[in-house]
Image 1: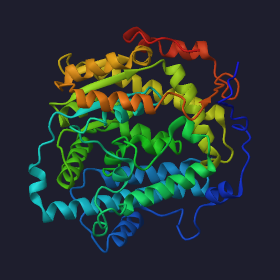
Image 2: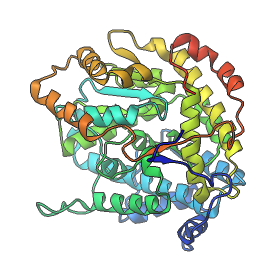
Image 3: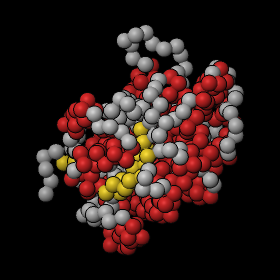
Length: 419
């Protein structure tokens, strides 16, 4: 039975294409859809006023070449979908140029200690966004806003006191336009410029981020990604954190990304004194939610949209992620890590909070507790409405067979099955 605020997206398989979506499918006429690695790096250099030093080549050029080849192999991708990814690559390479330029001018940045970060990992749609935004209310922890993750180093002098940062304005305008095309997205995963965001964007600057995959289907890229060690990219992320801390402290960070689940060993190598919290949720429920969100956005990126193909792709991808998580989990001992079951977290969030704080050695002061509990009151679950999912129908998934595939994960973590 549906409730008054339930959202049923009834056109996932045959989307209604508005003029704005049609334009987004085509993309800007002045951006070449067949640009190569050198073309992307040249555009990044022009964007930064002629900077050319990208720093040590940690393999990012090779990774970019693999992504570009994979984009051409994805026959269902729209021109606008391809350009969105290529334009994103230009932006993160411009960020990298500015980071390297700043560090050359201020080498003391590399002496900044990133002190015992609190890192959250967990499947997409498993409560990690809620948890990181909640704990970020504690101002003793440095957190990463969406706009700051998109442009860590400003490209212009700081604004006058009381004026908004132009980077935040740009982010708000971009995501505002995105959500105007896809109004139900806020109920699934809102993208507010001032919200606390994943540190995926920092890995993007070494072109080793799995977020490419949410916008297209890149089997060649995925195989390349898993075939290579990702430790160097996590060390580059640490460098970006040092830059961000130089602009504004404190130097104890709270971070989160689903990608960390499949990179527990590289994460430990880069941040050996971190506290790790991993949320665990029924992967079938995750796939049900994730594929609905991605298929909804695919009306911009794909033609045809192919919800069943989306479900097959992400069932494979989540299985691969979880197998890596199980294989690498023992890299973190119980003195530094905690597994949180989603159903227990939802049943008693305050208990989870206290467990996390105890593990991290953070005193839960009266001031911090008041701010944290205030966040829960201000952000109830499903505040933008509850989306109704149909994994078996629209996505043609055999759920019992899917559960059989994830038995290895159920054996390790007693998550509650969600129908």
